[in-house]
Length: 486
Image (cartoon, rainbow, N blue to C red):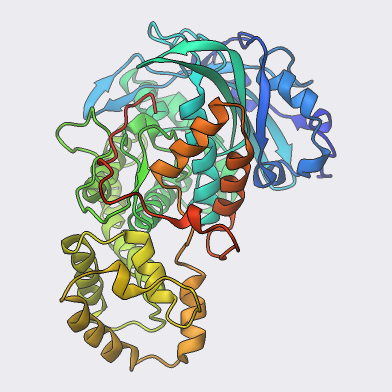
């Protein structure tokens, strides 16, 4: 397929619009007044096969305001259900976003999804709008996760609108143009299972295979192979979340991607000081979605998905596939953490060394990201100092065990430290930095947004004059506490 040269030259094959009519509702965006583009992502443009400089800003603004669609788009709101905080909710669906169209790109199909597009039949008395605060946070999250090589949705652009929206306070309205290979969720299958629509469950599974996992069509049991693929990808996704200190905070089944993407950014946080039970969502009083609960919650969600597939796959086989989740996650996590500690080989005691390191960080209330980076910066003039980051008498004994373990490695120190800096980010999407960007954008200054987006897209390479973007919050700063409207 030839690459598009502009937004107008994108071609669409809107498969979802050809599903049974109750899979979606056709809804046109509700236009906003006075829409102004804030930033466009080069990485997002590349997902569409475009160069960011070739995108017509005026045309993109018209699209994001809801005033003018691209030729071939067929906007719709998807219907699904899901378990929210463990309780099944049948009344879910796209309540403030629309799937505008499915673009065909050289990399494969990409959904263009406009968040903040207005009310739909699934808005549940909501206004269907988005606010600037949450839109910028999701925009930056896509950039940060892509920079860390964590599978994710991503946005092409974010825009502010002249209208105000009421949440906890009156805020500027905004729209976000989200990109994803697919927006199929666990909740799509739950909805069909609850309605006992076995043929449609199989139809949706085969759609995912044909459209996104065509290699699985050659398997002896393609539907089983798809469930195994979902289990594997979810395990590997959560392993990356855990290795990089990311807390999703709302791991409802309707927020789980069938392709193993990080989906639906709300009160998420990258931790600052390491807290194993960090819960940034103030509505999660029980800590159901705390950092250390994420691996177990993901398995719970996969089990719910598995139940939805029981009409097509034998229970014993589903259980066998689910049993592969934990060893897959543990293996992926171990590889990531060994890489972050500069360990190229595998030793039986590595798990204990990793646990001791995290325990040291938690007990000393050290910053998670800066501590890893300081461990990598030992040969860097002006780099972070481990002794300054971790103020604890336990640091010396741990370093002694760590150096004993390094004696089993074959790489020289220079090579090892350089490899560590390629996986230990200096620039992290911290909540207090995102808030600074949001406040500047509300005042009309988009320069911090562009700067932070650029740093997050390449988070491992130190940039001169950018130390402020690598700072942890002040020791006196209150804990991160966000709402679902975040």
